[in-house]
Length: 452
Image (tube, rainbow, N blue to C red; front, side):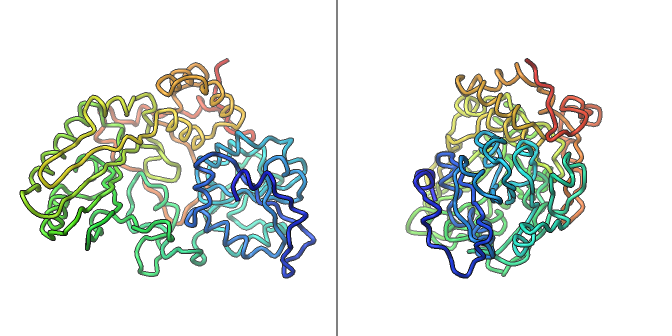
């Protein structure tokens, strides 16, 4: 259901399912949010909620934020950080009244920005649990405000129970130090690869497992412009492997183009504009060494993402570069990485701004909903290039630096500390924040030292 449909929806006119218990009518909250709200409903993003609703013994209805208070129980699906942000912006305590709001989903990890409007949080997979949780059960992956108002306890990240929707795999075989998914979801597969539904026609594979068997589009990831960086973050893709893979595609002599969309991460703490420029030049030379007069035409599109220190990863303590103008730097370097006879490579213009990254880090590191809302509203009237500077007028920017924060969540495995910092100009041991700059205790949220 999209925003417009939800506005005109009349719950009491719905034809109820005769097999559901109508003693409780559960609301399913519809957040607005432009394109992200639309994307939330595509199959691989909606699989979890669809599975929960299929299990639900109670009748349910979709509801907009302004009608939450009309229900005794509402479900809030958090598929990503964006949903946490939108929930903090859109839902206020007066919207919920006495309704019990139950949050869950892959984005349900740092709930501090919405802890004032959420009563129950389900961490990890929730299939097979929802009815008992509504009835009051509190397994070890469920937080209840009435039991632990300051979220000072420890909670487990529940793992896969069964495949939902079009899933044929959960988790990842790799253990890249920056990737939250691999450290929070134990890898389980039917053996059919990484496709997560009909929306991902081409499943994302690691470079070493990418099989290009015909012309068309393929999605993959390097996650580092240089071999040294990839090794440092446990993404063991060697330059020779890139060379050999591309050479094999060229030799296949397909009749039409092979289009490779390659995800690449920038601004690990040891990277600078100078090092990035040099690494891209090295990549250009590598592509030139493969290029030839004949063979398959290869079009490479790099989708660049700034590094984000994610909770429950080996690199959670690392700093985030929220002040760098990534788009401006790529305009100076040139988005054309290489153009030859059969190979062309360029950087796509869709690059997250420093402000987008800053909001993500603030949510992950525990900003309150009131503070997040204040910052977003203050920055709204400024151009993207000035938003982070405006943000610095209101918060202690040390929150984006080296920061050790203990998580309340426990995953399926022990998460080691990354040693990638050996590439940094200064070792981080003496640069960790004490946590005082983002508050010394939790009181419904970790309060940042907001500047007035």
